[in-house]
Length: 211
View 1: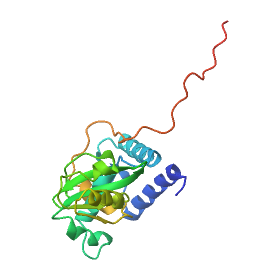
View 2 (view 1 turned 30 degrees about the vertical axis):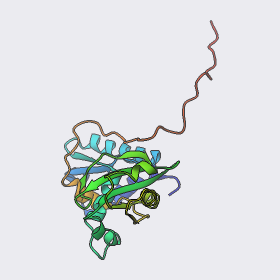
View 3 (view 1 turned 180 degrees about the vertical axis):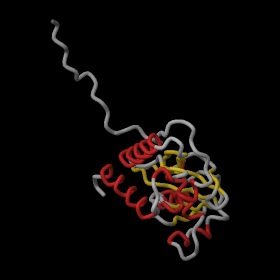
View 4 (view 1 turned 45 degrees about the vertical axis):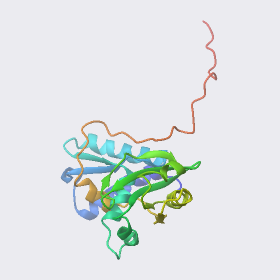
């Protein structure tokens, strides 16, 4: 969708709840990805989770990085799944999820144990720095920034492979991850790794007329 996310999301949530035959008060947990990603998508998702959490204060809330959800979708995949082609090769290599952030940068997170355990927090790095994560060993990278990172790693003399350039967070993987993740105790906050491009104007205010 190019626009209309804020209007569409509540309708989607209501449709899923109706199909499941559940009331919102039946929910044990609310799970949300808080980034990194687009400012608009992150803001809308976090706002929706906040609204649900305020409406149902006894329901736990789990906050996950979008990169961790992508990694979980590969780690839990089967050979017949879309992510299955990537799963066998990450068990014996350093594994990254890298999402194209443009300007020669990627949103990246390093994982171990076949994509199950996060080694680092999500980061915004130049492609060349992302390609050096995990040392000099064999590297496997998934996500929209995978090809650029793998190419940079190979140019630096490192064995590297890119897979699943079209990878996106998967709701099923998110549910599995949310079931074993500690709920947040404080406010639900978006994860913005880059300042907004749009900045408030300064020095443009009109001077108030003295009375």
